[in-house]
Each structure stands twice: as structure tokens, then as C-alpha cells.
Image 1 (tube, rainbow, N blue to C red):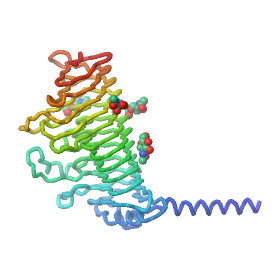
Image 2: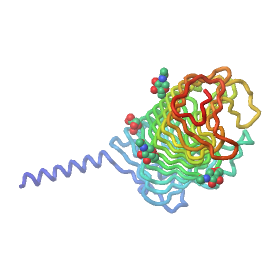
Image 3: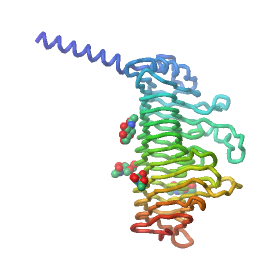
Image 4: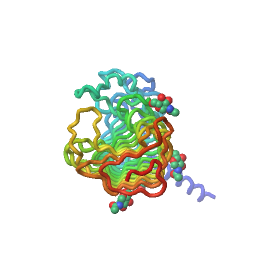
Length: 392
Ligand SMILES: *[C@@H]1O[C@H](CO)[C@@H](O)[C@H](O)[C@H]1NC(C)=O
Ligand SMILES: *[C@@H]1O[C@H](CO)[C@@H](O)[C@H](O)[C@H]1NC(C)=O
Ligand SMILES: *[C@@H]1O[C@H](CO)[C@@H](O)[C@H](O)[C@H]1NC(C)=O
Ligand SMILES: *[C@@H]1O[C@H](CO)[C@@H](O)[C@H](O)[C@H]1NC(C)=O
């Protein structure tokens, strides 16, 4: 009996010791955070982060329930070990221009084994800022902040968050490796400017799964240097679909390779799965892509390759020098919002190679005849059902 009793106490003490040293909690409230929705909490958050980052167990920066106003913050590493950032509360971005003309709202940099989770909400307060976005007409336009940006973050996991009304892009992934974003909901009005869901560049081994993205720009955009990305179980719309590019405006670092997009649904988006390269001299390569098991519910351009991309004419109108090869579209069905359901407009100087269309069923229900497919400068093959009739 006595022995058992002592044994239990030893166990408990050990457990406590393990708990204290391993999962130490750094609650922002202990660092002066005030959840009144009005006081800026950036200093308190940064203090909690600084101490957590230096802890050698398994620190957790903890943001409890409540509404916290937060100005622009950068959480920088390297830290002593893995670190978790748990957001239970509701974070509100600034609404005064002098406080929000920054590149990012919440930035994580130079970190390994970071986890950001908690079910909390990131409210970018975009309505207060969208009117400042005149980038379509003014090349010296001010930059509005990204809601959450990851720079040089490796072996990390972002999950169970909600991002609403970002001022600019919701999430940016740059220079990252082995970063996963899952079970996260992203929302902004369909007509909000440049509110891409997730934008990535110069990153490798990224998984994006179980997401709902409703926004005013691309649900996901993959920019130069994106490699080995797996996207699955995602619902997108409204928005501009899942894009690769724009690529090839200039320079020669425009590769995007090994991308899979599986089991996704697009609702009422302007585009579905899109590859766009500028009619400009930039050199690059887009290869090894697979788009599979995708439902298009009234999508403007469900399948589109556009190598003459020119959103704001005039453009240089050179043939794109980005080579596209090995792209498979398999089991893609639903309805097209325009009568050209499949557009494969490749470059005259770098024709697309090894493009496969397999089991495509994208009828058009509007006026002006049945759905059609358009091809130029492309070599590939079609297999199985083809509606519209294949142009290859
Ligand atoms: C990300 O997801 C992939 C695929 O499921 C998995 O192999 C990898 O370990 C995950 N990485 C992290 C950091 O969770
Ligand atoms: C496909 O995606 C939907 C919606 O995200 C999800 O509910 C479903 O489980 C996924 N199916 C498979 C086979 O993964
Ligand atoms: C589809 O989008 C159009 C234009 O953006 C909008 O007017 C319409 O209500 C949307 N339909 C659905 C079902 O969401
Ligand atoms: C084509 O791309 C697919 C999907 O990424 C890949 O599995 C396959 O190996 C590639 N084929 C060639 C010949 O590179």
C-alpha cells in the first residue's frame, strides 16, 4: 500500500515536472495584454514571444479568449526549440492608416517547428483599407498589409484558424520548406481587391488541406520558385480559383514544378485551375502538374492556360518564354459559366507539351451554344469522356 502510494506521488511529481519543463505556457495576459478590443497589444504579445522563444522545453504562446487589438508585429526566430502559438481569441488589425501602412500585420520569420493554431480569428479589418487600393491604375500605390506572413519557416504547421477581411493577401508563404496549412477558413467579400487566400513563392514541400476559401482574388496563387505542393479537400469560391503565376514577366527564376490539386470544389469562381504567364521575356518552366477529381460549379473559365496574360494592356506582346509540360487534368466535371470551358492558349515560341485531358465533363447552360474548347501551340492527348469535344 505505502509503496504504491509513494509510487503514485513520484509519478505525479514527474508528470508535473515534465509538464512544467515541456509545455510551458506564456499567456499574453501575464505580459500586460488587455482584451478590450481597443488597446494595442503588440508589446505584450512580443514580450510573451521573446520569453517563449528562449525557453528550451516546448513553449506555448497563449492568447486566451477575448478581443485583442493588435498592431503590426514580427515574431522572429531562431528559437531554442519548437514553439507553439495558440490563438483562442479574436485578433483585430488596426483601422487607422498611419498604423496599417505596413507590409504585414502578423509576421513569423526564421523559425523551425512552429505551430500556429487554436481556432481563433484573425480579423484584418479590410473594409477600412480597401479604398486605398488603387494598384490597378497607380503603379506607386501604397502596400496594404498581408494578414499573416511566413518567411523562412520550416517543418511547421498552421491549422484551425480563421482569417476574415484581410486588407491584402490573407496568408503569404515565402522561402519556406515543409510547411502545412490545414483546417483553416478564409473569407473576404468576392469584390474585395487583392485579397488572395494563400500566396506562395520560393517554397518547397507545402501541403494545403481541408480548407474553405471565399475571397476577392485567387484562392491560392503559386508564384515563382514553388515546388512540391499538395493541395486537397478544398472548397474555393467566390474568388479567382487556384492559379500558377503570373510567371515570366522578367528574369529567369520562374519555375513552378510538382504540384497536385485533388478533390477540390469551385463555386461560382471567375476561374478554376489556371496557369498564367506574361507575354514578356521572362524565362521559366512549369512542369509535373496534376489536377484531379475537381467539381466546377458554375465557373467562368474552369480549365485555363493563358500564356498571353496581360491584365492591364498594353503589354510587350512577346511570345512567353515559359515552357509548360506534363500537365494532367483528370475527372473534372460540373458546369462552365462561359461557353469556352477549356482554354489552352500556349506560347508560340514554347508550345506546351504532354498535356492530358482525361474525363472532362463541363457543359455550358447559357445562351450561345454548347461548351467549346480552345487550343493553340499545344501537344498532348485526350482520354475518356470529352465535353466540350477536345481541341487536341
Ligand atoms: C505536412 O504534411 C505532409 C503530408 O501529409 C507530411 O508528410 C508532413 O510530415 C507534414 N509536415 C508537418 C510539419 O506537419
Ligand atoms: C473531399 O473534400 C471534401 C470537402 O473538403 C471532404 O469532405 C471529403 O472528405 C474529401 N474526400 C476525400 C475522398 O478525401
Ligand atoms: C455568382 O457570382 C455572381 C457574380 O459575382 C453573383 O451575382 C451571384 O449571386 C453568384 N451566385 C452564387 C450562387 O453564389
Ligand atoms: C508528370 O507529372 C506527374 C505529377 O507530378 C509525375 O507523377 C510524373 O512522374 C511526371 N512524369 C514525367 C515523365 O516526368
